[in-house]
Length: 83
Image (tube, rainbow, N blue to C red; front, top):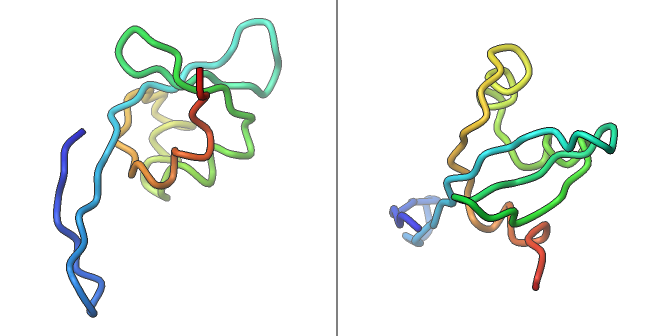
């Protein structure tokens, strides 16, 4: 994971990002799979994509058919399967 520093006005904190790909599950409607490399790391419903992606990423996902994204790790932690 790549680390960058973010300043929220009070203090600096390190933010980590995950590079993931989002693909629609073929057998289940409105369900998407999050891939990191060759591993499926999570299964999410379509409504959760809005929580994971920012505004620009959502436009790219739905209208430009982009699949690869860099997402802040704290946004994705709740969806990662613990296997």
